[in-house]
Length: 143
Image 1: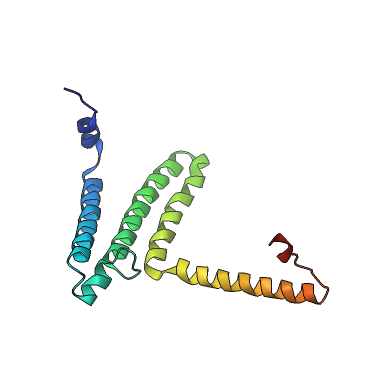
Image 2: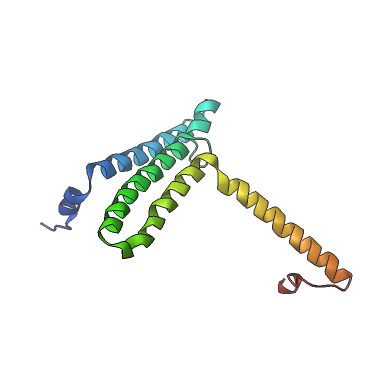
């Protein structure tokens, strides 16, 4: 019989990862079933929407990031305690903590909107200055 080694891989995957994976699949299945039955209840639609920002999937994703933050913080702490040269590992838990916070607070949407607005203001100013003969920013020449 052809063995692809899935059994040995499955034994090495921690049980918490398997549980998270099953929950991921469960959320997707419930979302698909909700779409297939025509999304009859609006509140359930907003809670199950995988694209939505205030959905169960969003909160669950934030929880996953927070769990990774905790595990990576423990790992980093032990590595740094043994060897001070491992100090850059502290960046890893910080990134996952920020990702967890971002999922809940939705900073990237807010910052994205501000960045687009700022870019539009800079381009408008560049066009204005270029029209007046003061093309100091020279962004428009890139377009």
